[in-house]
Length: 93
Image (tube, rainbow, N blue to C red; front, side, top):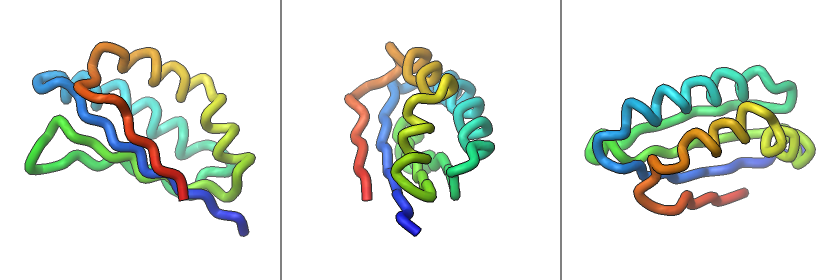
């Protein structure tokens, strides 16, 4: 298996956490239904609630590419514009 892992770090503008979580909920639910998704978890920093981490695992590069091109991912990216305090940091393993 050629498992792929992504860690995406997002910091939102303070006070926008609930709005972000509402948008992210749809993304998480739909991504977990993708055939090539192994796991997809969103964590919120308890010490700084404006900081979030997506921990994502896919069975292979094709599954990761499918996710990146999905309607729900692109909708999420568009809908969080203006909520981010900093640029998203994405690490791939």
